[in-house]
Length: 567
Image 1 (tube, helix red, strand yellow):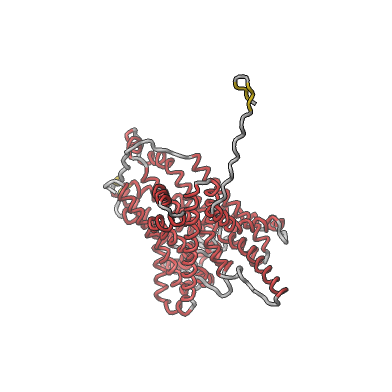
Image 2 (spheres, one colour):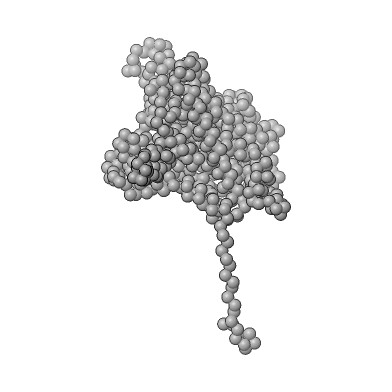
């Protein structure tokens, strides 16, 4: 009640606004997020409510070993990739030495090499019967392994070395961009105050680049957690190999789901740590119109050392494995053609192409939905749907087979009871399951790329199209799509290549007698027949070079527009 001039009056109640009906874009985003979340929810349900609870047995026997080995491997790979990636990025970005321009893109090439392929190559080279130890025995007159010491490649340390040699480009790319973006004025001020080059790096450049380095390390550790081919071939008992052992050898799905939940805890910890590190370590350059720090010309001795430091990772991570594989592929070309290579290559290309098209289409839907709705809920659901990239492929596989198998059994039971026929496997045990895994895992690549592409288009263009009578879908098709064709092709290319290389999910979900290039190479290499599958490995690497070429083109464009003339 209020009183105006002594007269009591009742304040009118505010009108109740009608809640807007959710748009098709909002509903579609929610449906996609729910479908993509299904594998993770299935794993959580199966682990919390198992049909056969072996958690106490796992906890008393193998699980502590799996966890400790996984932690050790993550730490070793994190240290290795940080040392290689940060050192090479800083040298290439801030120092001038012979071969620098070539090494700037050559250091990215190991991204094209699947880690398990590199593991097969170096095992073939460095094992007791390999050419390296044979040459040493002939050179020094040694007759047996007891006469000398040689590092064991099939060990946790060997696995860490292989993973570091192939995964360091994640750190290198982000650190290189961070070092290039740092203001030249800040570095020059440090030098005028008496800081040496090393002191300026340690006290200024490294802290300013730390958020980018942390992001790169988080990606490296997620890829390490997802790896199966390397750790399995080296007999390193991580959580991933434990999941395969419990699920396939012990034939216990619930136990596999419980190990998968432990892996998800690792993933959540990595995501939280990465977000926290970036939030607590933010640096802002307040200078405007700044100049970039030009590269420092190194004297001959230091230039040779810098050249060696930067060339070694590219040689170990790409040049040597690629050379061995090409030599084997040429020598055993006829053998590969006779050993199911053509069918495996066709399966891989068709499946990866289909996954690229579907994931790019869904990613475009999500990116455009967040653009036109301006809703925090829709944006949150879209980002949630794109978290599949952080989930290891083996975890996705067990989460997919559980609901798909339940659906197939329900449909088959209904068909048997009512029609007297069996429907067999409809979803599980078919290529649809593999396709679902690829889309769920790599959707983040499509969403992130297309969201960035749409972000470069001013909203005024959309508003103009809408005032001319175009619907939201019509605006997307007629206005936005022609402007983001490059982003769509980039997203599809990244998904295609990652789908070609994916091993853990494909191994667990593939139909009977169905091979992709990844499983084809894995099967032969596991049987010590690397020569006979070398052509398949070379094919995977050749396709893997495509996004590397795109990355180097982008790096070259940025350098042309943002680096000094001396670059």
